Image (tube, rainbow, N blue to C red; front, side):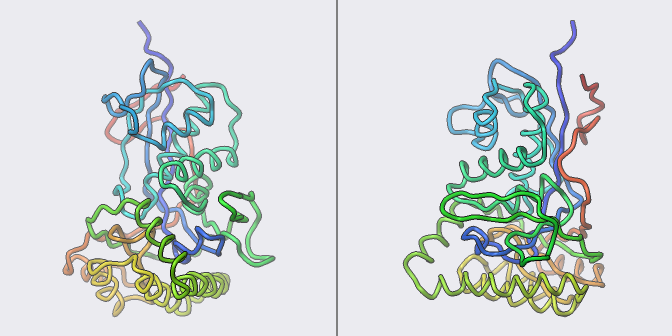
Length: 325
C-alpha cells in the first residue's frame, strides 16, 4: 500500500548583521541568509506530530500558526537541521518558512514568496508575542535583506505592518565577505528577551534612546556594505554590540567570544536576540577567529551567504531519499 503523499522542504538560517531589537520597533536592520538549512518532511495526518511524537496543546506554536493561517488540517513533520536551535541563527524562522511551503503544496494553497514570508512572520509573532519580519523574510527569500533602508538602497520585495509598526522589506546584494559564527551553547529563547527589551524601553527613556541609536548606526552600516568597506562595517558592528550590551541583551559568554575575536576581525557582535546564542565576526582570518572562539569556550562555524531561500527538496540530511508526489 502506498504511503500518503509527502513533501520535503527547506529554508536557510540567517544572521543579523546590524539592527536586532531596534528592528522590532520599525527601525532599519540588515540580515544575510547563511548556508545552513532547516529541513522538513511533511505529510497529511490525523494528528499533529513532530518527529514521531504527538503535539499536545501549546506545543509547536509556529506550526500551529501556519496551519491556522492556511486553514489546513493536521500534518506529520519529520524535521532535521544543521542550524543550532535557540542560537540566534533563525532556526524557528527557517522552520516556519519551510513548513509554510510544505503546507501550501500539500493542501493546494497558492504558493508565492510573499505569502510564505507572511505565514512565517505571523508564526513568529504568535510564538513570541512580538517580532519583526527580518528573520522570516531572510529565511524565505535568501540572499541579503534590508528592512526600512533609505530610498534607493535595495530592491523592494514587500511591505509588512503589525503592532503599530511598518517595515519595507528589500533585497540587497549579498556582500562577498567571510563571517565566523561563535555559538555559546546557551539556549536563549527569543520571546522572553524581546519582552524584556519592550518593558525596558517603555519604562526608561535611556533604553528608548539606545534603540534609536541602533537604528541610526544601522543606516551607516548599509552605506558601508554598499561601498564594500569591511573596516567601516566592522567598526559599526562592534559599536552595535556595545549598544546591545547596554540594552541588557548580551551576556558574559557572548562578550568573551566577541572580545576574543576582535584582534583577528574587522568587528564582532552578538547576532539575534542575545542572552546566549551566537555572535558573529567579520574577518579575513577565519582560522584565527575559529581558534580564538574555541579557546574561549565557544563553538566556531565559518558561514557563507546563501543565495537560495525556501525551496522544495528531494531529500533531507539523515532521512534518506524521499520520492515526492
